[in-house]
Amino acid sequence: MRSSFSSFASLAVLSVLSTSAVAQVAVWGQCGGQGYTGPTTCASGSTCVYSNPWYSQCLPGSASTTTTTTPPPTGSPTTTSTGSSPSSGICPGTRTKFKFFGVNESGAEFGQTVIPGTLGKDYTWPSPSSIDYFVGKGFNTFRVPFLVERLNPPSSGLTGAFDQTYLSGLTTIVNYITGKGAYAVIDPHNYMSYNGQHISSTSTFQTWWQNLAGQFKSNSRVIFDVMNEPNGIDAQTVFNLNQAAINGIRASGATSQLILVEGTSWTGAWTWVSSGNAAAFGTIKDPNNNVAVQMHQYLDSDGSGTSGTCVSSTIGSERLQAATQWLQQNNLKGFLGEIGAGSNPTCISAVQGALCAMQQSGVWLGALWWAAGPWWGTYFQSIEPPSGAAIPSILPQALVPFL
Image (cartoon, rainbow, N blue to C red; front, top):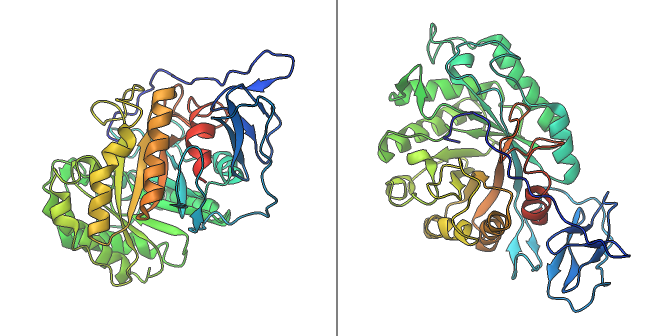
C-alpha cells in the first residue's frame, strides 16, 4: 500500500438485527454457516442464500420472512479448489473460485525510517493467532511484507549476507503459515528502492533474489512477490528488473513456486494501460510457466486507499476492466495483491463487484485484503481479529462469500 502507516478513523458498520418477536437478520446480513450461532430468519423482502460452507447471507428478492436456506451437506473442502462455482445473489453466472484468497499480514515493514529498528518497538511480525483465525474461516493465502534494509543491512548491500535474526523472523512466520496448509507470499515492501535509491542493476537484483529464494526453495507453498509497488521508474525498467528476478529465483533451485511480478505506478490495475505496464509486461517469461501479474486496487477517488469513501458501488469492477481484458488478450494470469475500502454499503457493493468480475473472468488467480496486522489500531481497513474495523461488515459481506 502506498499510504503512510498511520492510523485511520474507523468506519466499521455493525449489522442491524430486527427487534421483532422472532429475531430477524437485516438484508445483506449473515444468516448461516459453519460455526454461526446467530439468527437464521431474514427480514421481509429477503431470503437466506447459501454461498459456501462458512457463510449464508440474506439477499433481496424473497416474499417470505421465514424462509431460510440450509447449506447442502458437505465435507471439508480444500481451499485451493479452482473449479466452477454456481451463481449466487451477489455474483450471478458461472465463476471460477480463487486458488489464492486471503489477507496481507502487515507489520514487519513498519518503521521504515528506523533501520534496523527494534522488534516490538519499530516493527513486529504477524500474530499466529491471526493466521489461525483466517485459516479457520477458509482463507488460504497470507502476504507477509518485510523491509529489505532489515534483511540486507546497507553496510553490506543487496548482495551481502542476510541479517540472520530478521531472516529467522521471516522464516518463522512463513513456516507457520505453510505449516497450516496455507500459502505465504514473501513481499519485499520497498517500492523498488533500497537505502534511499531506486534499484537499477538487473544483475544485482537477480543475485539478491537468487539468494533469497534459495532460503525457501524446498517449500512449495511459498509464493515469491518480486517487489511491492514500484514507482518513479519507467515501466520497461521495472519489467527488466522483474524478469531478472524470475531468472534468479529459478536459478536458486526454487522451481515449483508461483512468482508474482508487479508493474510501475504502484502496480495499479486501473492505470495498467496508461502507465505503460501493458506495453512492457506482455512478454514476461518464466521457464517453469508459473508466473502471474500482481496488481493492486483501491476504490477511493485517487485510488490510494486512504479514504473510506468509495467513488461508487460499481467502481471496483470498473477499475479492473481494462486490466482484465489485457490479461485475457495476453494469455496471462492476474493476482490482486491488495484491495481495500471502507465498511459502508457503497464500498461493500464495490468490493463485491470487483471480486465477482474477477471470478467471472477466469484470469484472476486470487485476491488479498489490505490488511491484517497487530499494530493497525483503528485503521478503517484493518481486518485484524478480533476487532479490526473491517471485521464486522467487510469480512462477512464482501470477502467470505467468495471463498
